[in-house]
Length: 390
Image 1 (cartoon, rainbow, N blue to C red):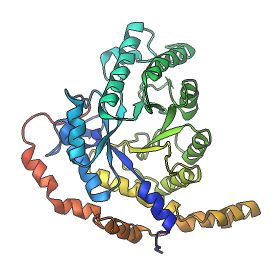
Image 2 (cartoon, rainbow, N blue to C red):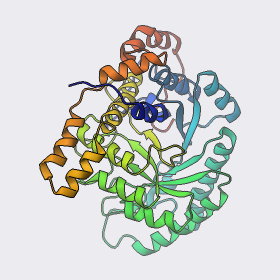
Image 3 (cartoon, helix red, strand yellow):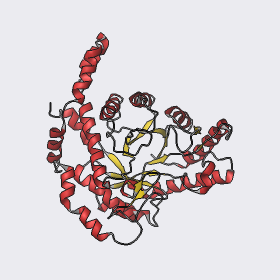
Image 4 (cartoon, rainbow, N blue to C red):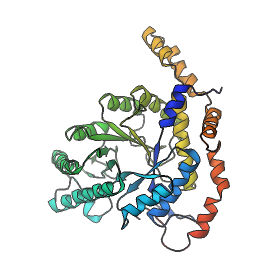
């Protein structure tokens, strides 16, 4: 069945904004091969131009997250001006302490104070970029950990992580925030220094109110109830941001909602329940995906549309009826309220919503008809295509 959007649903959807990641537009692949494609951006300016196409046809992606050093430029004022000219802005700044040889045994947790100093200074440089671009959030994901029992002092690494994060946090100013991501495993397979929401929560809670947890939807063990984690972090006031993506087995860079759209629906219901879509919400929504075999810009368009669609379905849950069923112990009735909302086709209503905002009813078709892909293939000849690490 299909439905119309209620005034409340339309109000919430007006506020829905999803950052797209600059690295999604570069070449990527598997652990065995990085695949090149014609028209791939050669620098951060071209990445932002591509990202702007997503916002142009969806109205959902007004900011572009950048990655340092992948998006290093000489003049960040110029990069911010270019983004504004394209109709978008610079969003979250992501750090990188997982590619230099020095970080073989960790960055912020390394036993060597010289390497720890290098990792801390890198994050201070990222904050300089935030100052120049007007970015609010510094997002930290660490590959730090160990592969064998006895290899590392587990407690000592947590102590050093706290000390490193404390210095980085002290450098923030104004409304700037630190969001600490976690990952279940990889590339550290015996232990990861920030493997779960609890560790991230413990670390950021020790820093202050502007330190929060970033939840990546693909960074959990199979069968994990992610919506429960979302609820708990919202309840504790410590959910700072999402990295939306999907996985089938272990990797996490597939299009959000591709593996389990019902899970995405359940997550977004808890976001609504916990106030994550309220005015002045502290929760930032971002994609963290790489497009290995599919075209990059359409992959990002499909991703933000999936988030919008599942948000609209979550808004259809009759919360009064649901609560009454819960209180009455009506197990199947409560579940049916969830399932009815999930199975409602909101796509025609969202097409109408887009047209009412001067956007194309079918963003995918509009992008294909724009001729943008043919233009960048013709124009971006020569130079080095952006890829992992560039």
